[in-house]
Length: 444
Image (cartoon, rainbow, N blue to C red; front, side, top):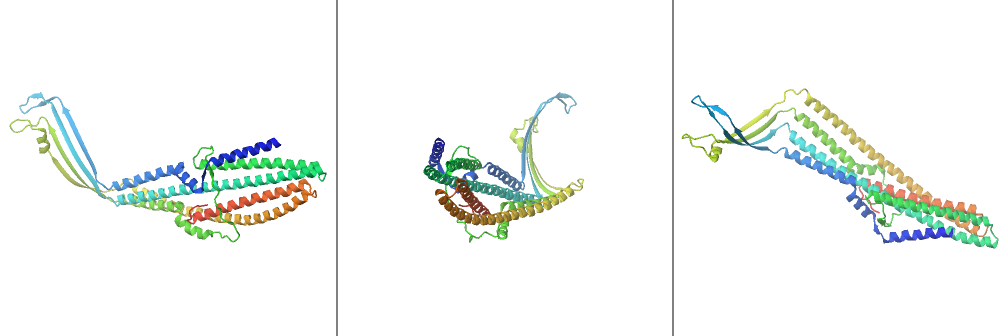
């Protein structure tokens, strides 16, 4: 057993020395790194850029469309001449054109298209913020889990140290004949069990670090140790934010609600676009054309130069076009009805999003109150168990109690301390969620 104890102590010292050499990160550093490297956030950023391009294109659609073309053709063969004879006729013809067209009126479709793209971009930005918020909450939960695991490791180490001292005392009592050797064996068995408990808590701590590393997109090898923040004091006098007050604030701030509302406005713009397609389209166009043919000659039979032909053959055109939809198999009517159904569906989505937010806040509020009550009860339990264990330890030291009763009192104290730590960190996390919904940044 001494060799086993030496191995555990040496391993613990090596781990502690390795962690001491590592960099220490606080919660803000962890969150900032996660926001910078999280894949989901990067994907949502790409989506936001996409909708930004869509908005710019919707605005660009109001600009004129300009096209140009160049052509060159060769003709070979025979042709009938003015004297009613055939002769070889090979020609080379070049043409150039430039045209422009702009939509003047189309039932405000272009305007509503810009509006829709604008709302889509805003919704995408809210989706990006929601992704960031989720990462911040997940990192905070992982960070607090590490603090909780570290506290459980400390509890296990403290209990192991107490049991080690009790082994020494029991051995002396056994040697003095005040206790049977069985008491020493039972205490040593308890010590072995507590060694296993310490190993389990250390493993849980490593898993908690692994979870944080993965949230930060870091490899599983040891990267850093988190800093120990000054945690808020938990007391019965500490107030918990009212759930309805938090909801009234959150419904105005939360990105999932704002994103759903922007998508509702986008669907309304889609209805306006569908209705706009029922109206005539008025457009204005202009074009320019010129050409060259190597067979063209002047009045005296001389070839006309390329530049002169381009100048002499210029043609210009201006035109207005009015396209009036008459009947398209009721496609426009169907599009309007479907767009209106999408509005109804999105209205339900907005309401459902608000309901889910309210339920989440109510759940967080109930959990925070429950954690506070559990913490206060656990705190009293720890005080009682410590006093009971002190009394039990004194009686056991003089041989008035057996090792079974001693171990039972010690295990009760350990469980009470573990419950207290769990309630404390659960309460801190739940209140941080409420603060976050209420618009307060997450800090420790």
